[in-house]
Length: 124
Image (cartoon, rainbow, N blue to C red; front, side, top):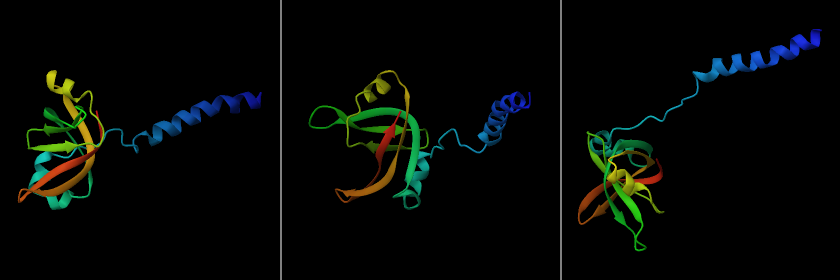
């Protein structure tokens, strides 16, 4: 009889521990305001950030697949560049959907002007 009681407690203990630690696990990724990146790029260059907003333009690589998009969140806008293809990104534009992108903030000088952008690692 004692073995049945202990065996019945194991699922209860597992559930209790899971509930106890659930508050310690971050379930959502914190987003960074694009305006903060633009206003203080030195604080963000080389760091991983996640931005979220409306996608409003793309560019294509030589194969014709989109590999870059611009995203704006109401505080600013920034370019996000990927090494790979972004086949579904144009659907975000067509359907006026928001996208969330994570990557490393970078700067580059082009035509005597510093460009701030995100080197994308993932997007949804």
